[in-house]
Amino acid sequence: MLAAVTPGRAATLAPQPAQKTFVYIVNYNHNTLVGYAETADGSLRRCARIRTPAGPEAVAIAGTRFVLTVDSGANALSSYRIDAATGALQAVGNWHETPGSSPFSVSVTPGGHFAYVANSGNATVGAYRIRAGGQLLRAAVQREPQGASPYHVAFAPDGQFAYVANYGNDTIGIFRRTPGRAALTRIGVYHEPTGDGPYDLAVGPDGHYLYVADFRSNILLVLQIHKNGLLSQRDRVAEPFDHHPDSLVIDPSGRYLFVANTSANDITAFHIQQTTGRLTRAGRVPTGGYPFSLTLDKAARFVYAVNFGSSTISGYRLDHRTGLLAPLGITHEPGAAGPYGIAAVTLPGRTGAARPVSKKTR
Image 1 (cartoon, one colour):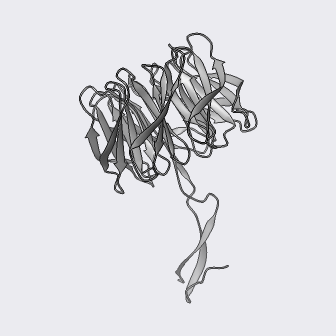
Image 2 (cartoon, one colour):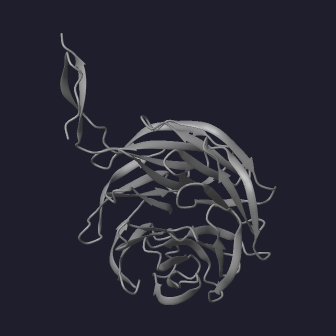
């Protein structure tokens, strides 16, 4: 159906704004949150830089409007508003965990309304409501066993179940979460072999499998998520000795898993068998020094890794047919910035479309 045109005005076509992807990293040594605009060829153009409290270790996206960081040096969770046009950032506010809590990561529920902070220092998970303006409201605290050292929290796609990787005691805490509520209710514990060291977690888009990077044992676990949220092992894949897998990302189709191997300075690509969740190696690609975190843009075109040891960001193009990654180039952070965490957000838009607009006849 054609849009109506006001008499006396000539209709013209103006292009609709294309989707925009911004990539945000935190530099541990420089206490900064830095933003990059993703270009059509996957290269990154800096668009934002803002100070964080002290020692940022992780970054996450809340919906499409806010960036969250956790700073272990200040025991702080902070919120920043994204300028949708430019990717620039504005500080909204922060909340400090208890002294010695050493927050290690921050995860956001599907829908972007709640944030959960894994506090490795005091074995707690802090839950926060994210208000409409980006302000943070402490809503609940989940206590893990003393010495558990929780490193990461992951959610089922519908947000009903939550999983906590406890690096210190080789367990995964299993929790039920009521929609709209922050509190977690423990429903079980998955015990890994002693010495595994669960570090990062990723849930497939269909919610059937949980993938675990075991840092100490150089193992990847594939755990089936049952209807009641409990876990059972489906696969156990060994990475080469001393590779130390530490970050996982799954493409939106659920066909490929990418693993950053910190000590090997590379990324392993795996095919995911859709009916069983099992993993088959597809290939390996080098990174910079000590890749600590991975992210993938919403269109699944590009994968990025932050390299703590070389203060760089490595970019890769994803081949959707094979799951292989082709290196695109390196983005350098200044000095010994120590980039630690990375996350990407794609803002809505319609690529290639045009909408009727009008202007006065001259």
